[in-house]
Amino acid sequence: MLPFLLGACHVFERLVIDCPSDACDSGTLAPDSESDADADADADTDTDTDTDTDTDTDTDTDVDTGPYDLDGDGWVAAEDCDDADSSVYPGADELCDRVDDDCDGVVDDDPVDGGSWYRDDDGDGYGSTAVVRACLQPTGTATNSTDCDDTDATVNPTARETCDGVDSDCDGTVDDNAGDAVERYADADGDGWGEITTTPDFGCLEAGWSTDGSDCDDTRDWLHPYDGDGDGTEESCGWRRISAGGRHTCGLDSGAALRCWGDDSSGQSTPPTASGWIWVDAGEAATCALDATGALDCWGDTSVFTLPTGPWVEVDVGEDLAVVQDAAGQIDFFGTSVGASTATWYDASAGSGFGCASGAYGAYCWGTVDDDGIPGGGSWDELGCGTNWACARSATGSLACWGDDTYGQVSDAPSGRHSGLSAGDRHGCAIDSSDLGACWGDDSDGQVSSAPSAGLQSLSAGGAHTCAIDADGAATCWGDDSYGQSTPP
Figure 1 (cartoon, helix red, strand yellow):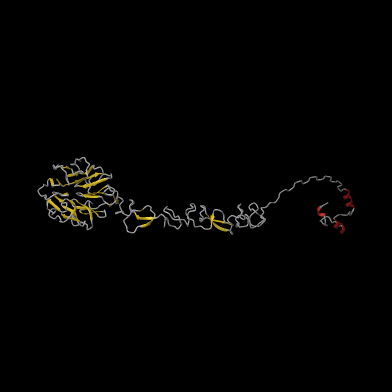
Figure 2 (figure 1 turned 180 degrees about the vertical axis):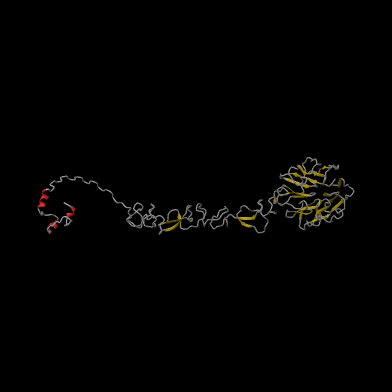
């Protein structure tokens, strides 16, 4: 059947098909004429017996699995630990509800509606600043965060402060109001002795402090109290001895070490580095010292010196001559020969080309200054030799001088009671009954008039300068300082 004949009547240019309305309605054509019968006779009587036996056996087994977010909380089931509860998902606020609200695998950890506690690792009842949030107070926590060291149970706000270098009571200050604090004195130079003060501090005995407040010089660690007489008590402090030479000065510090300053052109200001010396004396360009065994050592211009064997207890150095004395009073001059006697003497001194000694029957000199000017009248306890002049001090403290008087170094010697006599190049000095320095003779460099008004323990007259140890153990010098000889270290 022609497709264009189904359900309708169609008219073509050369064929008009008339059909009853019911035929057109039914979709069939009725025979109309003879030509139609012929056409029908020629109609195709073949019958298509082919049958399509193919059967579609394919089965669609795919299942739509999502991703699904059943509770609508924005997290799919694969990520949401409870996709039936929209309040449970990764990152949700943990609550005290026995549910793992934030899907971290732990129930009720760090809940937003829980309490806040503080880690107490040392178990002292005081927590650190590390906050622990929980529904109930966990073990190992405290209700406060006031512990400044949560690794030490002895450190907390109620602990007793002790001298241990730790802020035990967490008040921000180390060792304050410590239970074992002591009376202490500032020890700025670190020598073990604190500064002399009438108002000691109270605190811990830490670096920079001492329980001994008797240091006479807290700026130099080599000046401090010492036992000067060997009785076991540190009754002295500061310099042990000082000696003014021609243009240099030497001294013994508290630790019995040698220190020299000033002219060093001949090495006279470069002493041995060892300690344990008991005596030092500076000459014109040489210096000599005695160690604890009494052995003699000299340095500087010692070209004319042949050192005698000791032990000795004193040494005095002049310009080209020196003299030593032993415990029995025996003396020995060395350097320029003066032919001195080796008898027993009270004291001896070396000057420039001459030497003198005093004994039970008076004073004697050898060399360029003879005996003519020596005053008689008994023994002399102390002698001092300068350049062509000398002085002596009697047992009563009176002074007598002889020799060259060009600068009044002989005639201007003061009257009265004195101690600590010393003769320099052209001036002399001694300590009067008020412990003040009394000097006379050449004053061209102020070596006489510039003497301090403070009390002195000892003094020494040199070439054109004078040095002394004051009542506090400090060294002080005046006069010529062109080589730094009047500037103690």
